[in-house]
Amino acid sequence: MYLKTVRLIVVMLVLSWQIMQSQVPQLINYQARIVNPSTNQPVADGVYTILFSLYDAATGGNLIWSEEQSVQVTNGVYSVLLGSMNPLTSNLFGEVDRYLGIALEGDQEMTPRKRIVSVPYAFKAQTAETITGGIMDTSMWRKNIPDIYYDKGQVGIGITHPERPFHLVAGVNSFPFLVESPNGSSGIEINTPGANASGGIVHSFGRNRAWYNYAFSDYFSFREETTHNNVLTLKRNGNVGIGNTNPGYPLDIIRPNETMASDGVLLHLQELGDTVNAPFRMMFQGPVYTACWYVGGDSVGDFQIVRTCYDPEDKTVFHIDNNDLNIGIGTSAPNQSAALDISSTEKGFLPPRMTQVERDRITPAEGLMVYNTTTKKPNYYDGTEWKNYDGTSAATPHLAIGDTYQGGKIAYIFQSGDAGYVEGETHGIIAAPGDQSTGLGWWNGSMILVGSTGTALGTGNANTTRIVNVQGSGSYAARLCYDLSLGGYSDWYLPSRDELQKLYVSQALIGGFSTSLPYWSSSENDYSSAWYVYFANGSFSPNGKNTYFNVRAVRTF
Image 1 (cartoon, rainbow, N blue to C red):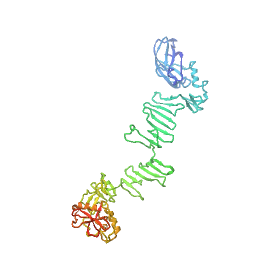
Image 2: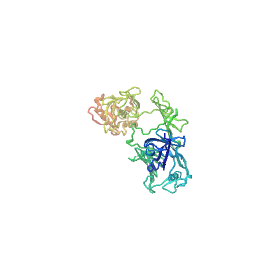
Image 3: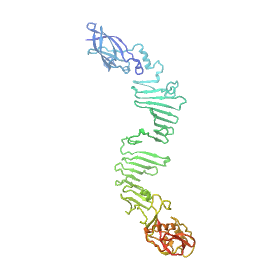
Image 4: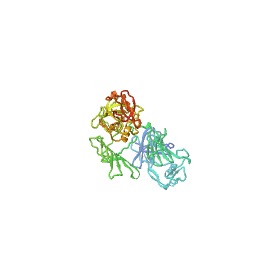
């Protein structure tokens, strides 16, 4: 019905669409007059539906934009703003030729299409786009629609002689460089300080977090903006710090409490490769191959610590089987029946070593094993008491005076201040269960000065040794005790005067003592006499060495 339309005004203006889009409307003002072809008269006044379309060719071609508007027509004339319904974008006009097609009230598109042309001042925009005749020689720029690039020389902003491919200069404490997403959710600013500043600051920010990156003469640092907590530091000497600004090691990690992971993991290393049966491990190497270690997983996922460098082949020091979870030391194939498999042809297994008192301080689990340095035997705990490996008891008895113990009977238990006392341990004097003689002299046939003058607790053993060394072999009190082997023990001696008095005090619990004759001590008085103790009343006095008295040996434990 409508075969002809008269265009009165066509105006198009496109100027720097992305840079100046807030100053230039994204609309095209279009006016036209519609007549009836049969009468050549304007159509009746009213509202008409008109479809506007843009093509890249006069006929055929590609439809690149369209919109439909309800238009008021008066005396055949109408005026519209193209882009009111469907926005026009700058890339629609990247090529030279564009053609407008119009269809009225669902009819066929009118012919011919009308070419979109520029108004006079739009030629200035063309100059800005092509740069020809403008402020810069276009020979240095290349265009590959929609891209433009610069492949020669250097670009300077704020400087007339740039020293780098892209050189920005700005005032002190300013941020001359800003990269921001369209919605303003992320970006980066670079601060170039003045000549007296010690470094630069890069301020980068995202939707929920901002960061400061400090560049100083000695290190480069990333810090969180709000708290300024250090995140990453790179030092000039090659050290890397995570969580600190002064790393003292090649990799120095400090984790603040607020960043503590719920599982406690400090360092997570994961290989994401798809290589089958490939090991994943870290290598630690000292200077000039003084030490080389692999730590990590082998080709089947077992954890290993492997020494290399020294041997023709890697030597496994520690191995955990990924499937059975058993541990191998010195072997990469621990026996499946063993939780711990130690392999060596040069060294043995050394268990914890401790005294019996130290052992007894432990709250042991059944099966616990130690080496007892007091008894010189390995011990294990059977769930009830400590045992020797031969099954005999290794438990520490609760000792008292008069108890039968270690070849005799306990005559005295050392107290604090006594020679031989050890806090937390039980030690004392054991008396032989009976007399070694009921009549024997102190001397060996000659009155000589021996020098065994000790009388206190703890001096009897040294006295006895001195007497034997001076008087030699023979039949006398000290020699009898020195040679004694009794109850599996051979360290018996003649007690000193004070040690013998402890036996007098406990004689009822020990038993077997005579009250008719005194007992010799190892304590010498002078060249011709030595001390004795009388068990009838506890008195003591020197007497001639050639006198025959009782003899009772003792030992310490």
